[in-house]
Length: 239
Image (cartoon, rainbow, N blue to C red; front, side, top):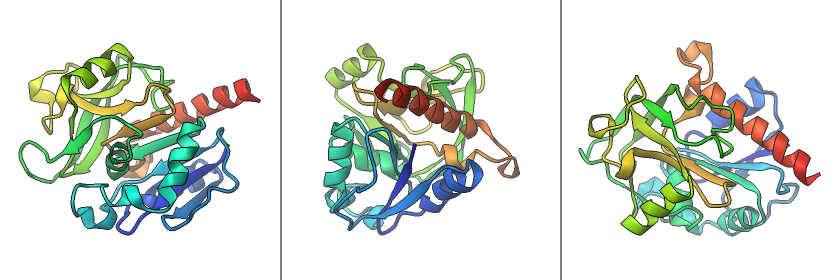
């Protein structure tokens, strides 16, 4: 079980993930510079993170330039071979731009940068990030984005619902999902999704910023624990 964090010019959440995965959980983790052209040492049983930040200054659309970085062809190959890829915030945007996840992340409906804690409803336990989560609990996780409004056409949205690919929805503290809890105007209040194969996941909120008592919130811990449990189960099946 090995972890990698892909770093682009403008990434600024890479060290948060290095700290949580490497220092806090004591898992092997490595930074991977965007100009690398190989993922030597990484196998389908491992996990790559695409972190938050402002890759290439968020010029054009967020993630639109990073999608063409040399390492991304390897990330796509890794995902297509069953490797686990998790995109957080800007990482979610990059995965959508790369075609590994459907839809796009558009500017927030209020056209403002939003930085606050929000509540998330868990829609399914059938994903690496939600495997051990409580579907009755509203998880408090921070957001920090200007372009977090998830958009997809009606056909894609119906497919996401039908295939149980919606991982998280913005909700109230009591878990109710409605227009008032939709912090950025996302279609169906979507805060996170996965692909059909369930090995590529993206979410706008930052669980790595809610994983230590010193931060005042440890709800993010449960998402990382779910990830580890999923990987342990998956790796046992393919061993």
